Length: 159
Image (cartoon, rainbow, N blue to C red; front, side, top):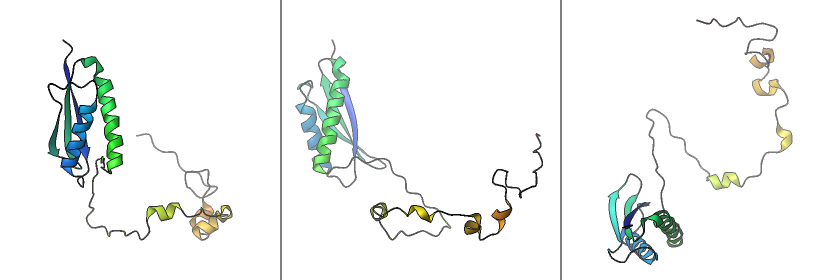
């Protein structure tokens, strides 16, 4: 007896119509030629997840050795159909609130920043004076650990 069951969990965005999602999932699993008609495939709305409405597709196969093939076929069909229907498959999201910090407001969209032309190549910094106004960096040897030029730093203790 090679009879076996597949379970395919799937989450959709909270803005999705759960009845529509349920109907699409049921249609897709029933359409696969290797899924048994009896016992009938089922779709369950299983949970309100942290970032998704969670469903599970369940179906029986006459030959459990076809499990991975059927799961792959059904998952590809789900992704393609959800894309056509505008149903989002979300990724986990965490909102972090940091107390005591002034929030920063961005006035431009990221797409606006991406479309801007890159800065001209001749606008690079030519000297340390341009960076620090001719102060601290003038006396730092760039190959040392930050000590003023001509001075050696004492060796670090090994304790």
